[in-house]
Length: 221
Image (cartoon, rainbow, N blue to C red):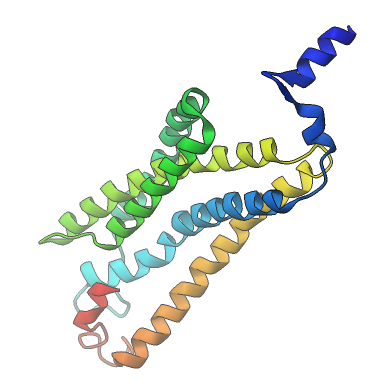
């Protein structure tokens, strides 16, 4: 029995009891920041789209003589919002298995690269028609969700492996708490960008002049 417990605490020449007894050090805090920023960007990218869809509907689906700005059709709105969640599910299954085979730190870096590339590409969605723009946006948001799906479980697992038994609960809670800050940041950035854009390209309210209330430069936001 004693030999079994000793083998469980020492695998591959590494003594896990030493890690469990270790005090909080700089590399613990660095791991919290790195993995926490992963959760921060996950929540930011997933939830900011709900605010962006308001602008997309106003730009690409205007309704002539309507008392309110245009909105995305229900099927388009469902696709834009839901495709990233589908990618998240697929990414969790794929990167979870890949992380066990190649190592979580290496795969974690790949998920971050995929998230950065897909985020930039989503903002650069293009097309000659509203349908084409929504198609390219959905394509890149799927791969964004795919990267988020890999980042989400790997962040928590890496943090759990790096922390001691005494501080593990607090560190993992801190990492998960960054999701709330990511959601808040999404709303804050939307408000800030809207305010700055309005100061550079002033336009009347939609109720005053529906035609000129949406300036052409809004397509670049």
